[in-house]
Structure formats: structure tokens, C-alpha cells
Length: 405
Ligand code: CUA
Image (cartoon, rainbow, N blue to C red; front, side):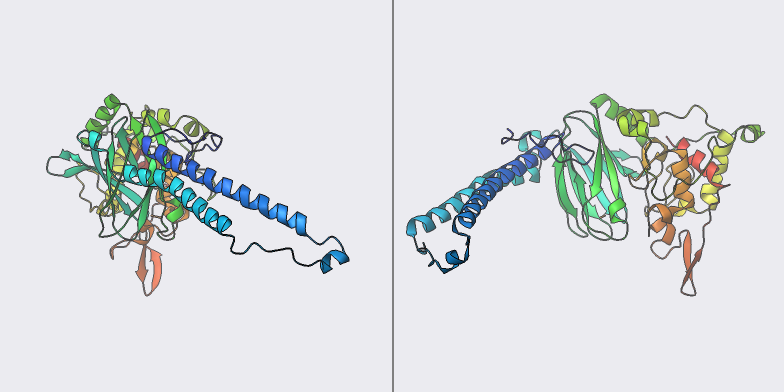
């Protein structure tokens, strides 16, 4: 779609820019924006000019001016009145045509692209996103399920079915498409397409409670071949490492990081991640070179002992898990944690599992869900600690989660 005298706002870049777009749906929405800005801008200039002219010409300059009789008034001049009505209608039609075209275009995948479209389900939870791929079924499990990072192939229309589990949320990837509400008991949808491989920011755009502002996600668009590889890796059950029998490795190899709480206002991203997130994403798919199988085995056991498994699925690691919480089968391969809030690294993961309420106030891991306690539980009308992950225990769980590529 041609830009309507557009381009002059191209300096408005950034991860959530609706001007610096990367797909046809966002492009059509940007077109509507430019048309509207130009039409309303012209109206503003005309009205402001007439107002300025009248103000300067007829203002009282001294006492005798105050006595001057009111100049003849133009009420009821049919030429001006009809002219203004016609101009208003024309301006509205001028805006309405591209707007309606964009609304229909954004509503659903164009007919020509329907057969090749990929269907994905996105469900909003307080405060994270679940993504399912109905076309990628896993035997005895159901559709491939991930959380907070939606991976798609480039150049293909993606139809996203929008659902909500608890309250209203809204699905928005500013550079690709948006935004459409996710409403409980209502089936909404949108579609989008990425023109080139990229790493995009998504955001819940409907107020949904305490941590609405930090309910984010990422959308990663990959070349067809990389996408196919990713699907194969994700459909596999979780990695299981066999620890050496003597446990010597754990004693000689500590966690590999020193934890110091970076604090509430720490950025959450390293500059390397910010500069080239797609490269960071690719790196994240591979197991780390310095994996410690003993530490990982300890983490696996702690993950059960701390009852993390009650809510989190780790498919194939002898763990059940109810789908109340993000599927962690391949958590180690994601670039972000806590719903797109923090870069997925040791320190952030440590902080998230030891101090969840500091990272995301009011989250269900901390407060519990569906009557089950979380890190805290109700006792005599008071919240008391229930699950405690200490700074000493955390490195093992961190190592385990990071091993889940
Ligand atoms: Cu979910 Cu705002």
C-alpha cells in the first residue's frame, strides 16, 4: 500500500514503533494513520489560520476601539454553511475509505493466502501468554504448546485465534499488527505476516490487573528452514542429562555466576541482547558449553520437591503438571522469562525464582492459583511463606531450567 505523503515520522523507531513496521497488516494501519494525520492536520491549520486572522484583525487596540460597533455578522450565509458541511463530509469520506479498507484487510487472512496460512492459538493469562500450534500435534499430548515467545515462519500469513483464561487482555505486536482484545468466552482473531526474519516485541494492551504493564511477549520470525528446525526441537520431550555417579563435578564446578540482586529498576537486558536479539535467540537454542550435569540433576529434584511441577509442565521429564502456568519443557531455549520482561540469563532467572513478587507484583507463582498456594499461602487471613527457594538452592534450579533447550 503506498504511503500517503508518509515517511516524515520515520525517526519514530524503537521496539514498539507503529511507524517502523515490518509486515503488511501494520503497514496498512500505518497508512490509515498518515491519512488521518494529514486530513486533521490540514483542518487544524485552516481553522487556526482563520482564528488567528480574526483575532488579530478585530481585537480592540485601545479604548475607542471598544466603542466600535460590532461588524456585520455572517449568520446564515448559505454558501459558507453548505460549503463547510460539504467539506466536512468530504474529509470524513477521505478518511473513511482507507480506514474501511484497512479494517477489512486486517480482519482476516486474504483469500489468496488462506490455504498457506498457519493457525496459532494465543491465550492471555494474568500475566503471560500461552501459544499453541494446532497443526503441530504431539502424540498423546496435544498441540505443541509454548509460552511468551511466539515463533513464526516469515512470508507466511499467521492467523492467531485470541482467547483469554481469566480477564480481558489484548494482543499487540506493534511492528506487525494489532491490536485485538482477548476476551473470556469470546473467539476473536487477527492475522499478521512478517516480511523478513526478525525479533519483535509484543505487549498486552488492555488493562488486566496489577502487572498489566509488564505482561509482554516476543514474536520471532524465522526463515522457513530455521522455523522447521525449531518445530522439531520444540516437539521433542525435555532434555534429560545423566549425572556422573560420583558427584565430583558439582563440587568442583560451582554455579558459574555470582548472584547479586540487580534491583527493581535494573534494565533486565544486556546491551548485546538489545543490539542483536535474533543472534541471541539463535545462541539460546544450543546447550551451554559449561553445563554441570550434577547441578542440573539436583535442580531437577528440587523442581519436584518445591512443587514447581504442580503448575508447570516439563514434558517427558517424569513430571506431570497442570497447565495453569507456562509450559517449561524448553524454557532454556527462550530468550526472555517472566513474560518477555527479563533476558533469560542466570542472574535474572535466579532473581525471578527467588523473588517473583519483586519482578512481577501479584503474580500467581507468588500468590497461588485456583486455591493452590504458591510461594505464599493464606493462614488465618494472613499470607505466610509456603515455598521458599533460597539463594543457595536457586543455582541448581537455574542450571536445570537452562538445560531445557
Ligand atoms: Cu493482560 Cu493487560
